[in-house]
Image (cartoon, rainbow, N blue to C red; front, top):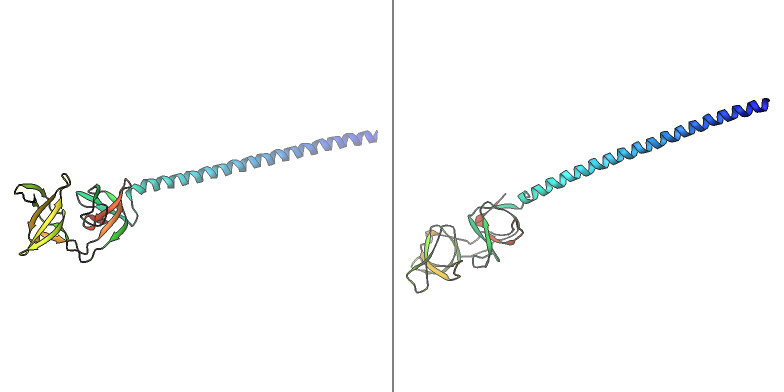
Length: 201
């Protein structure tokens, strides 16, 4: 009889002990799930923060806010194959466009290229009819000097023919020493732009 009572008591204690163990196991399981959820939440917040950073970077890049950014100041400026007014044009860049400066070149003793300070009429060789007129700010070639007057030339973009004109020295601004910038446009096109039309930001 005493043995039976002891056995019943043992079974009851064992049952409660097992119950306690299963409750502890459930608690541990819940704690693990809670920790897992908190970790996922942290990961989501981290990803969200990185996404905001990436978006802000992609928004800023077209504005080219880096120290090598510059603005085109002329109306329609030639993007050229080389740092010379005689180099072929790769197209025109509109005034106000933001570009990235990649390199620069400073010519020395260059008195064959100059900028017009006034509008000038050009004529084709052996012709008295006006071929075209260039506005102030255009770059021209200086091909000679006669009696303190310069003979200048310009290749017409439309006809690809060379026009000539004569001009007084005070109406020319020589390019000697003026920088040329090798730039990349917002569309990714690269070429040389005369420094007079480039303003560093």
